[in-house]
Image (cartoon, rainbow, N blue to C red):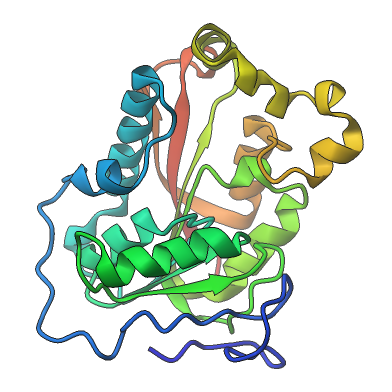
Length: 268
């Protein structure tokens, strides 16, 4: 696949944080034979390549989050040809998406080490070669041209972005007019904070700038810089909501929910 890059962005240029892609050429055109789709809802791929924590409770919740995202993506619609995952890390979900759609998935992340890991697993991992490509980029400075992607996936990314409004504008510009944004983010209210304090109290520091200091808090990519109410509000300003799921149950109020997944359309 030849990426649709913005003017001034080069797939062969030196790694840079802004408006420069890092094209890893993950055997996209070299892979032989047709890929076999994974069974709908199969989650073994996630456990092979990633765990949320060493805590089994959080592993279970992490797996449930991915299951819900897969459900609302709706691969059976066959409307996806080119996908983008923002905050792909080691590329485990990007590779899964590439197995599910009839096209190519591009994974974007700020960590060069994570992207090299994704490249290695794409070429030599248990899934074999997949139509996945990895790019070093910032969500606020995506290097892709307009109308590039049918599907954009962001799983637990928006809470980490300080300038979220600008990132959402970048995502909107990269989506095709009939494209879908599928996103998930934590509902950090009563139940969420009780569970975090109970099972992994050390993770509370990434939600409190007073502990790390304002400067370190802003610079650290793992800290949570956005409340879920802000994320929800900005998404609804920028996109049209078509589906929402919360868990454990969608009908529960926000205060006793854990995670929210949404599917949204681009405003034309």
